[in-house]
Image (cartoon, rainbow, N blue to C red; front, side, top):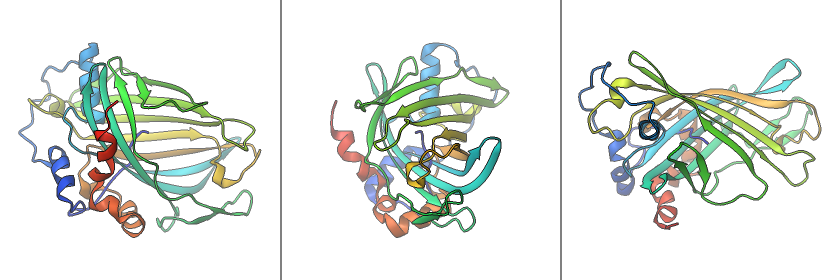
Length: 288
């Protein structure tokens, strides 16, 4: 899912995109004091604060990014393989049973040394040159329920999913919340389901959450996943799996986007830089 994410002052040149993103980029009001009361335990308080950390209570553009490194894991050995940079663009709105989001993610697998987006990758386990998938999927809808449950906008045949949000932890001006998911999906040609598990720890500031009128706050993200060999690696029934660890940010400013993501997107998908809000608009306008 989760949200990996964006970069460059002057990046979004389209007027519609700037208008949609205005709440995220506006100057911050004066901070509230760190000890201000904050409801992190009631169902209503957990929902409100989780949405402000992961998305927004307003309907403006939300930017997120992630930068991570992948490793192959066989028995007890981790082998560095490649990296990934990702950006997400989303808009959120209140619905009767929680908050609905329309989200678009664009990720690039990059060379672990040069940071350049890859078209092929020499698999060290097999010696094969594998074709690396490029580009992003179409925007999708999902919903966070009042109980912080996760619901896809449409049914995906064969998909199994577990999702939960752990209780908030707060100490001083620090607030953390962990969101995790575990999925399994049958893939044609593979004997076993493709499994993908992800954990994201969001770290926000109490003072930002307690600020009067704040509809969103910036959070730093620690990211970990464990997944089956990606099909494009052509590993067949080779024992082992992949894992990735990385960092990210939600409600990020455009200038904080990973430079490697900006470079690859400018060269391969420049329309995403010019007006990301336009990519979301058709699905945002489609009701239901």
